[in-house]
Length: 427
Image (cartoon, rainbow, N blue to C red; front, side):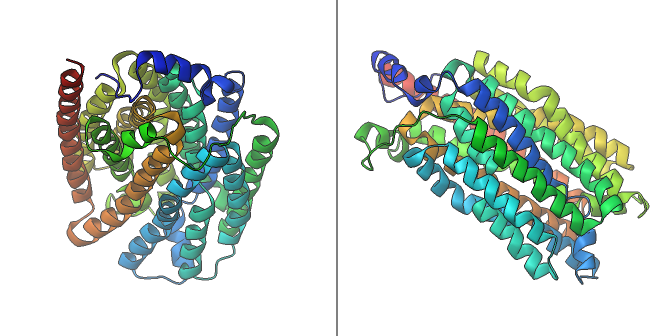
């Protein structure tokens, strides 16, 4: 698909010479490494509670099985609801004041809140503190803004794939740590441990990340506003990417927070269910780790939109048999394949947005993209819990698969529509 741009080729060359990415050409590789480390540590801390979250909810006084499922989904989704609400604000502020301050704010805020979660006395406090963590957190989101805007355009897919690999590694290791650590130091001390990890990421960010940022005036150039607010090809691209970003996280999170309960349906013993749940959750992230950088590089070669369509279709196919597994290892194998298919989606979404939106407005647009992702993370657990509670856990996979198929079809239509519109404009 042709790139959508409001600038001519000559204007783009001049813009790149003085752009944010151009000024930070000496720093982007080191900053990428720090962001990978920081995203890894913060996501380990955020996801390690997944295997024991239903058990923690039960310890906080909820005894009914259906209520445990619902509160687990609510407590887990609260963080992403709050982050989704504030992501556009942080994206806008990053355009005004720089990307690094947003990273530091997120790391310090999360480091302070995580130990408090381990001190909760009831599910209301647990959910509220998870919500607060989302309001002031979002390190991985801020890392995406930094990397997407500093990286040269022709390497954006690869760099975002590498960043995604670090985040996914944290997502993979987190449930494994959460499956082991509570048995060694207890559930509450596990949250203290996670706060310490995020504090290390904060220190690395403060002292190692470098940024050459020139503050812009409040006024927005008309050309920058056109790419976002006007009906037309660019607006359709942005809308399609927002919907895709939401669908990606919806698909992954519709079952993940309640995998422990699903393993109970598969007759996994209570003594091993937490560890097995951690392995199943890690399988998806491990598959993504293997493919994220490769698919990011593929997006640099053939275009981000093609990768999005292919990956959505593949995820749809792999999702269906997960509804019919009879043991935990079958589910783990299929989640591994699903992780491989999902790996290319978010880097490709960010790459398409990078190629479509002017640099001065990119932070805000990527902020809205992050909001769309978090909307999926909120709706996924809520929908999974509701569907699983009403018509059975296995139906969650079939409903999600149908949504993925619809998403692939709509992206295929949108890419053709935009290509025709761009061709018509150039004739």
